[in-house]
Image 1: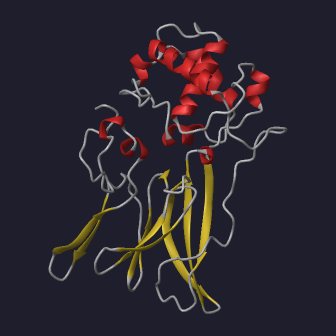
Image 2: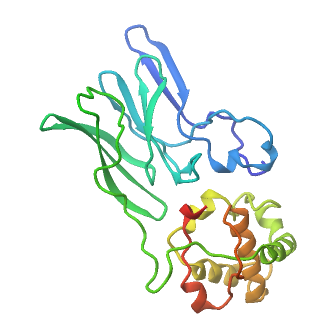
Image 3: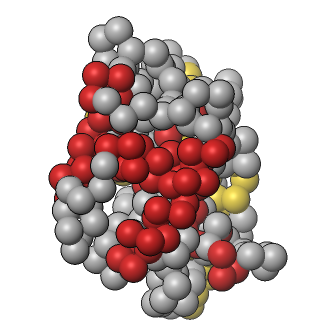
Length: 279
């Protein structure tokens, strides 16, 4: 309803059971609050506790910790889009540390020792991010301490098309405003007044939207719009009108307006890469 899940949070829980007594020792909402919940207009002005995220992922238990990553991406306080790997105190459930990962956990973490140094490895993937193993080096003498260093190998990045700048699309504020008017007339009935998506129609703004298209060119998205939208009369909008609507979608997703309008010709759009990290 209104772009929010029909179920009440928490959407994901990490729980500990005392097997000697059969009692619940503790439980917490695991996973960052999804962007479509945190940024929903219906919740503006409200303080939303961490809701957790849905997903079935495996933890790693050490002598003192439970280590597990988020099942989906969200925007961090620094503006990055990613999914933390978190460490919780096994006795209390208190989060004692986390490290940023560029994609969600897709395989259970494991740990090993090499030459007296402890490492932690986790598989990540999701969306347009290809599968990858990240290895973290724990502090010397960690003995189960939370991972505190960057991955030993850099995260993979998506290269821009040949000859294209590694930058997000740019547009003007005036173009985005024109697109807002067109969107209200042509698109809001299916995708919602705030681009949040309705029922089977996908959201057209925000972190989840950018993640779906990150790494692709603006032309990929533009041609999808040109050939399938609006649903009642696909292809009825001009290329200039669709460029304005796309500018509005990018503006509503947090990208900053510039001095030049987003072009509508295919060759120019092919040289522009959509990058979720550009927010």
